[in-house]
Image 1 (cartoon, rainbow, N blue to C red):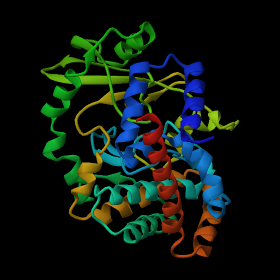
Image 2: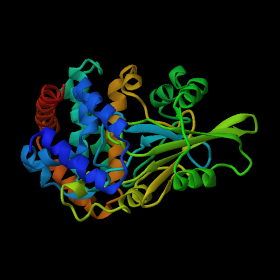
Image 3: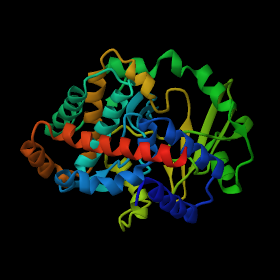
Image 4: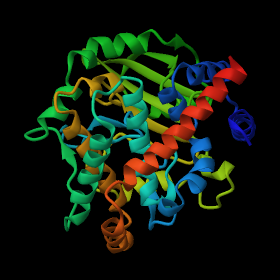
Length: 358
C-alpha cells in the first residue's frame, strides 16, 4: 500500500471501532499537507508499516512496553500528588510491546524533520547523540529518576512556566472551543471527575493533538473557589498496531506503561477501556515544538528526552540487561542512520500525500 491507501485502510478500521468526527478527520488531512513534521505526527499507522523494512537491525532489538508514537511534542508537564511540577512523556495512546529502539528512532526522526523545517536550531547528528547519551546514561543507573521540576531541571522549568503557558491564555483558548452537549457517557464521566460543588459548568468539543484528530474528545470546566477547574474525556481506541494485525494491542497497555514506568504519576489520570479522563489546567499540558525550539540549552532538553524514554523502558525490568548489551554492541551512528532512513521515507510519503490529496 502507498500512503493514501494505508490512510484509507486505517481510517476505515478506525470508523468501525468508533463514531469518528468526520470534520476533524478532514482537518487532519489538511494538517498532514502542511508540513512533514505534522505529517509524521498524524501517521503512526504508516510508521508501523515502514519500520521493519527500513530498520531491520533495530527491529531485532530487545522488546519493551514502549510509547510507540514518540516524538518531540509528546512531552509535557503535570502536577503530582504533592503539587510538584513533573515533566515527561504524556501520551501513551499507542503503547505496545516493541523493540526499545523504536521509540528512540521515532523521537530522533521527529527531531531531524524539525531541523530540516527550521523548527529546531541544532545539528542533526549532535541532536541524536544527545538523545542517545541521555538514554544510555539512564540505562546504566541502578534506578531511574523522574523529572521533578522544583529544585532541579531549570531549563525544563523555564519552558513549562513561560508566559506562553499562562493561565489566562490557557483558559481563554479552552473557552474559544465549540460549546456542545457531550454524549451522555462522556458527560457523566466528566461530571463524576469534577468537584461536587463546581459551578457554571460548560462543555466544549476539544480539538487537540494531531494523531487523535477524528476521535470524540470533550472538555468540561467551571468555577470552584474563585478559579477555573477542568477535565477532559477522550475516546480511546486500540493502538494502530491492532490495525496492523498485532494481537498484543491491548487496552490495558496504557495502564501498564503508566504503572511500570519510573515517574511521579498524575493523580487525576483515569483510564478505562473506552475513555481517558484527565485534568485540564495550566502547566498540565504538552510542550509545543516552538517552546522547545526556543530553549537556550536545546541539547540539554534533547538529552533529557532520552533519559525520560529510558524511564519508560525501565518498566520492562527483565529486558534491562539485554538492552544494555545491545546498546554496547551498536555503532555510534546507528540512531542517526536509522532516523535518517525513516525521515527520508516520511518526507517521501508526505510529498505523495500532498500531490494525491492537494
